[in-house]
Length: 139
Image (cartoon, rainbow, N blue to C red):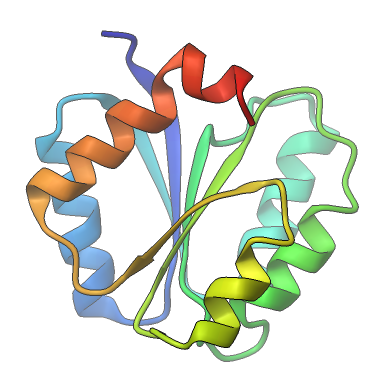
């Protein structure tokens, strides 16, 4: 199985950040994890990485309800960037709103929509699926 070099978590809830990061680490699939507390902080850092020609995260786990910039503001701005590599966004939110789920379908960069909380086994399943080259080529 191919290892994932970099995964990003964007969430303002410290407990959820801790649990998600721990599940990712326990998967033994991911080499490095970046953590941001809001969409603006994540966008600014990822844009800076892009300007330095650094590799971006292959997968971004994104909460929707955050201060400063929420998940939608992040996605709207992030999709304006010119990306050389494949990046998959997985919404990981407490929102089980049909409106949010439908809205997510309008962004090709959003690969999954998960409602918190998640489990260790579900996190590993998502990581394996999103790292699969067959899945990537179908997006």
